[in-house]
Amino acid sequence: MTRFEVYVQPRASKTELAGTHGGAIKIRISAPALDNAANIALIEFVAAQLGVAKRCVRVAGGAKARNKILEIEGVTDDALRAAFPAFKSPERRSSSARK
Image 1 (spheres, rainbow, N blue to C red):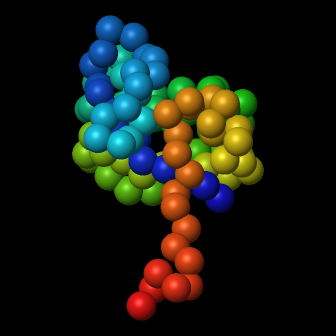
Image 2 (cartoon, helix red, strand yellow; image 1 turned 90 degrees about the vertical axis):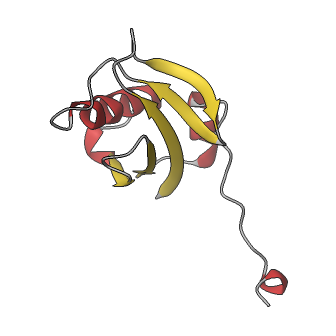
């Protein structure tokens, strides 16, 4: 399972990738942030971009915020980079850095 941060701009003129915002992938969503519509549209968009089922994409954090953490099942970091060029793998800390 892969986790990454996105910044969502609801009520945009169209749903699209829009670069980065504060280190997160910025995605413009045409749906409003009412009744979970923007989160549903976000899941549909990300699943379509990655070619996975919608059930493989989950909002793991920030359901009511613009900054969200997404969890994706069955997708490698390379596939994420291909779909979202701004994607950066989370840095793994070495054992020497945990002092």
